[in-house]
Length: 457
Ligand code: SF4
Image (cartoon, rainbow, N blue to C red; front, side, top):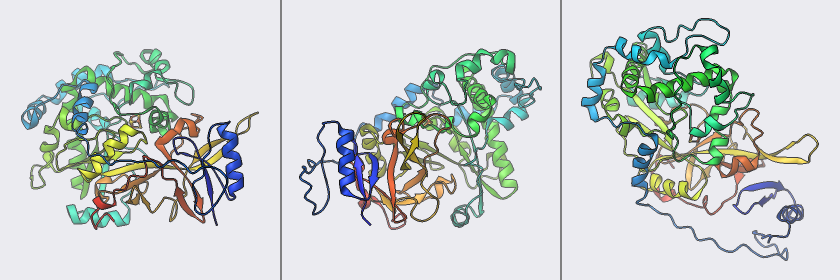
């Protein structure tokens, strides 16, 4: 079977046909007088071939400055290594709780009293959490890798969920209320005594498209306004009293570490669930404090940290694993060159199928839909790298590197997302004879095959 894709001027797939005539007709209609090119073997369609595109792979020096820029955008104080963190950990945890408690809600919307932040132990127990992805059981093939590295076969993840980019403060979330609406009733409804919205940008390399598709607008995050309230509270506590917050974060990581080691599981912590803060620059001592595999003190037991990031050039400790996030624009692609070629990192890519939806009273509009699970649901190779299914679990540190970590596009609830709003962030493709195929574009024509070692091929 042959398939003919209609691409827009960025090279993103708009529709797929099984006849070249139908594809060209649609392309001409969509182009409305602009040039239409045909690129295919041995067909003379009487239209021009596209001009060749040169794309250089660049291991750029600018990437080295990106982490410092991210640090400056997030406006957090930098603590100095192990000594600073150990000093912070000497703070009495009741003092930390006292300093932070006003940043957190005291009741639920129903009026029921909320006990989650009543004292230091409960606050520490509620600082980190799980979502549908991080709470997934360790898949069987990953268990073997976890056992090889840690002697245990199960891993367990906890994450810190702050509110993402400042645009969240101005964006109406699906389901009605936006953050400003929620905050306007937060004192009365949630008993919140301090409302100080930090203006810092915690996702400095985010794009319009990734913000529109951000998972903060999906699933449980929107099921209850309290979930937004909680992320907001964590964010203002971090900014309102950073030292006390880091003390409580240290306690929360200890709890997770001790609890996991007690049941012979490997503890993982993801500090940026909806943010992109360079934690290795904010507080490097966190990683060394929990970074000694031989440590006998259970409260300092080894923890594997990991994150996804759009900031290239981050130099991280051994127990902090980083996967670069694909965004589909030129700045991101240049950063990706650095990450794969210089640092051998994985690249997380969101894939979607080109589908369509009938709009009320309108023609069908093109939308991406989720690729199916199982073989053929993702391309076998992308950017010249092996593709691994990143939805089976969130345990990125056990994936080969470099590789492409493929994620199915989770369509944000009620956001009315279309191919236009998803933009180049979602790599669009079509299923042809049960196999996901996608187009090469100037940005996606990068070929990193020469940088993959045997394990990741
Ligand atoms: S997708 Fe990631 S980088 Fe983009 S806004 Fe959400 S958390 Fe930030």
